[in-house]
Image 1 (tube, one colour):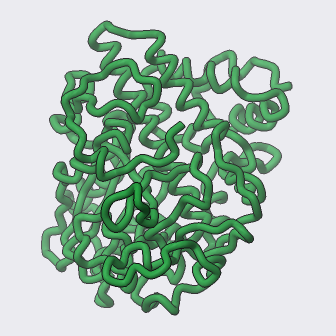
Image 2 (cartoon, rainbow, N blue to C red):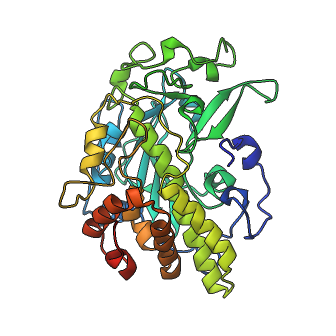
Image 3 (cartoon, one colour):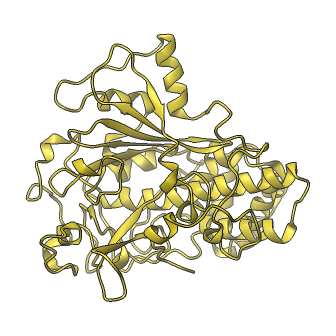
Length: 416
């Protein structure tokens, strides 16, 4: 498994390669987004941002405008049901508004299961991603200036970065970490995709992180990583670890929350890759079915990779307990369905692993439910076959009581 992917090199890769058998989904460079089975740019999007846009156009919804520099942000989060306590803060310049981002003015990101909203101080626009359950991730902006006619702009230019190997060759999501420069790397630093497979010690360069992780060191809160004029010592050090306040770095009152919660960051990283996996396998299954070129070896390989990730089989273990500082740990868990014993796939562990029960909560997503039937059934088969006997009972009992549309063998198979 390649834990780090150098974004700069991959973003420049040619889009000439077609869909073909690959051992790792990251190896594919291009999948045709306007294939007749997908029609990504030719069909109307059906994601939460697109649906909100229609409500605004019809007059059903009006976005209030805050006068404190936040503009449409509070109203937008409310309408999209995105919790403020999901806020994470990034000061590396990975945005179309890079000139406004710095350690003193980090970009805030808020998210739920199928939407992310980015806010930049004094920026020109709010940035959004929305997950369409069939066609995948769409990207939008909303001008920050108050307007009599609020309009969302769909940003196809952002796909130069958000559609390539880091996103599994489909329009998708990315969370990356800036690593210190070494002799083996050119430039000031190198950005690497991070998700649940990556040890904490390699994460969060260019991010602020509030919360405690014991003796586990990370690259968060280290502004030397993105200061080319005064790089200093970019190695993790005590002053950047286990912080519960960011007030020494910037004016936190300029944001909706004062934190960049460590548990929210861990969750966002898991969700970003899980979203890309769902979109990629959905696209490949639709294209293969349309072209009548279903390749069992190819699809089985892809589905095995998704099942592995959904079951957290290659998750980097926590070496010490992790504790956030916001209410995110409680509110995120409260958003999920619970079985008769009060258990949920959204329950955190945070001692040796991220979640208590080893099956991704993204199994409840509309993107999972809208996978082509043949692909979705294969996913269920792999999940059941790979659940160890010790873990199977809890997971099956929870899912049977909280999810509709299960295949018969999931409903009837013995839990123990």
